Length: 113
Image 1 (spheres, rainbow, N blue to C red):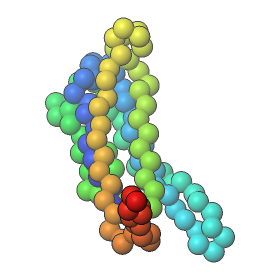
Image 2: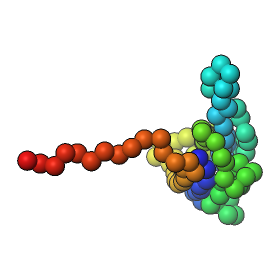
Image 3: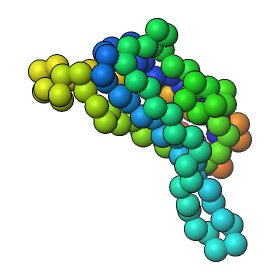
Image 4: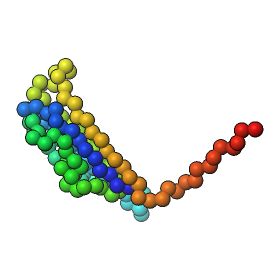
C-alpha cells in the first residue's frame, strides 16, 4: 500500500506547539512479530506561514510504501493554556492506495425467488 496526505496547521497561533510523529510497521517474517518503528518526528511552533503540511513536510517522503503507517499528532503547548473554549482544530486527510491485487473474491448474493 502507499500512504500520503495532508495535515492542516493553519489554525496554530503564537506559542502553540504541535508534534507529528510518523511510525511504520516493520514485520519480521521469521517469527511474525509486528514492530512499530519511528520514521520521523517533526515539531511545528507558532503561526504557520504555509499551514497545509503535505506528507513530505512532516515525513520527509512523498508517500510511504508499507503495510502499516501510523500518524500521531500531539499539542504540547497552547497559546490559550489549553482552554477548552479556545482549542485549535487540526484537520487532516490521508489517502491509502493499494498496489496489490486483493486476495479475496466477491460473490454475488443468490437471486430472489
